[in-house]
Image (cartoon, rainbow, N blue to C red):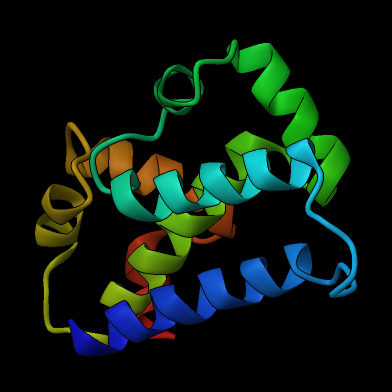
Length: 134
């Protein structure tokens, strides 16, 4: 769990670095602050919430507007940020723990192991079982 925690932190430090390239004399734009707040929310809630609507609601925005701002500011869609973070955590758990795929599915709040497997394969490109073996 400690390794997964640190890998998650590395992911967000890297994402944060992307958004903090502004010079010290410049103030953050509203869009940059919005993306930073969005990424902080993802970090706090990715285990329970994978829907864009949840994050948009927390930021008092429409999902469409949030998606547009995140994509324009970061070059990556809001849904991709969420999916990639969940996949990163799943990969870390698969590689660095003895948890079963079912346990990881439960840990990441998926409705079933089958749904988790399809989700993981869509994002990563291989099934969780294959990833764990590699």
